[in-house]
Length: 347
Image (tube, rainbow, N blue to C red; front, side):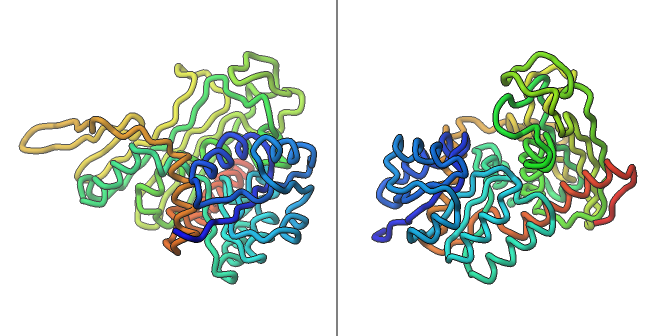
C-alpha cells in the first residue's frame, strides 16, 4: 500500500512500550509513529528517544494540535480512556483503546457516539481474540460444531498476582481490580465466541481479603496499605437469549494454579475449553475429544496491531467494535453495582 499510517501514542507506560510501539514498528513501511504524549512528559521524551519517535508532548490535546495523525493508541489508566479517545476521534483519527473500554457505561456510549459522528474506527485491545486457539475455535463454532452455545465459564485467576507496578490497585484511576483488568479479557473472549449476546441480568460479588494485607507477591511488591480495589470478583450473567455465563476473577486467591486464564463453552452439539484448546462432542455413538494440532505460533498482540492498521488503511471493520464495548461495559459495571447492593441488576 502506498499510504503510510501516521500514529500517535497516548501514555508512555508499560503497555505502550511492551506492545503498541514495538508492534507498530513491525508493520514496516505501513506505519510511522509520529508522536507520543504522557502527563509525565520526561517519560514520553525518554520513550520517544529510545524508539526514534520525532515528537513528545505533555498532553493529548497538545499532541493533536501540533501534529497530523491518522490513528491513535490510547494506553492510559482507565480513567483517561474516554477523554483521550474522544479527543482523537474528534480530530479525525481512528482509535485503538486499551481494555476496558472505559470506567462507566455512559463513558463507553459517549466514545461510541464520537466514533459514529466522526465516521472513524474505535477498537479495543482485546488481544485474546487474536490468539490461535480462539481463531481456530471460532471456525468450528461458525461451522455449527458446537451448535447453540447456552452456557459459558470465564476464568481469570491468580494465586498471588497483584501487580506491583502501575495503578492497578487504585480504584479511582482504574475503576476496579481484577474484574475490570484481567477478568474483562476472558469475559470478552467468551462473549465473542458466543456471538456477543445481549445481556439481561447480572448478579455479582466482590471480596477484599488478601490485597489489603502484607503477603507474598509473585508480580512484585504492591502497596497493600493503599489497596482500594477488590482482590476477587465472582459473577453470573443471564442473556436475553437464555444463555448464561459464570465468571471468576482474582488478583489473589487461595487456588492451586499461580495463573489461570480460560474460557469454557457448552453447546447442544459440543463444548470446548479454549486454553489449551480441546473440543468435546458426541459422534457416531461415541464421546470424542478433538485437540487441534500444530496451531501457528503467532503473537496475538502483533496480530491485533496489524489488523487495526489494516482496518485503518483499507476501511475493513476491526474485530472489536464500539457496540460490543458497550455490552461489555454494561456487564462489568452491572456486576460491580450488584456487589455493592447485594441485589441482581437488570441491564
